[in-house]
Image: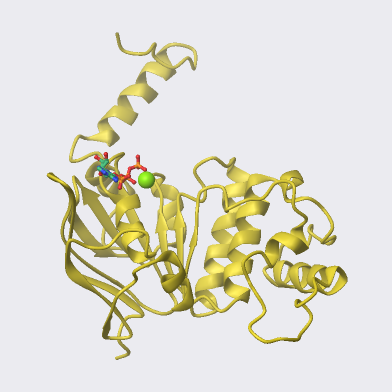
Length: 272
Ligand SMILES: Nc1ncnc2c1ncn2[C@@H]1O[C@H](COP(=O)(O)OP(=O)(O)OP(=O)(O)O)[C@@H](O)[C@H]1O
Ligand SMILES: [Mg+2]
């Protein structure tokens, strides 16, 4: 069997006296989505910062294709094909779609279309890459990124990462601020990235979003992997409970629903 594209083995991370991650072992394979779940402060962002070269592990190793690697900088991670899309898609609101697509992609030779920025060509390439992901509403590379919806911006960032050869796509809560329709759109694109053979690490608080794309799930609680399981191994209720650290969210949901049905559909007032 092929080695996972990216793996962490026994990774610990502390900031001074504060232990944030404990003995994390996780892997993600080509064509697989690993969902990282966990409550606020569980360590999810810290973990992906280790995967993307922002932080260094205090101990433990990172492997790519079965070999130990170091990721001393975000640039080193990106050179190895690890692309991280942050919550707002690394946006440049006043930049055109074509321009933002090529930001930071310096020409490696002394010639080629981007030695001098070729607006027409950049727009063509960017629009094609985005449309290939099924986002057909974006058809003008001169449009400003700031005019796109949150879901379209996320989609643009993902299409860009794939276009420039990412093998690992890390998404930190890409659907957090989105409405249902836009979130569905981003989830479809995550599935498309997976179909193209990328390894995807997907962070979310929303169990339904995780279940829509995940092949493999890891729940972080206070910096440790509390559960690590495959699609179909656990129900939505079990996952929700795990994320809440065992407190039964399902019971809470049932209570709220009960309250609403006897109070004309009104939710209960907030607790004092
Ligand atoms: N640079 C740092 N120095 C000290 N503590 C840090 C640092 N970065 C993160 N932490 C701590 O590590 C813990 C985990 O933070 P992290 O941001 O990884 O959580 P998270 O799971 O991403 O949470 P959220 O769901 O709210 O985004 C928190 O208690 C946080 O205060
Ligand atoms: Mg976070």
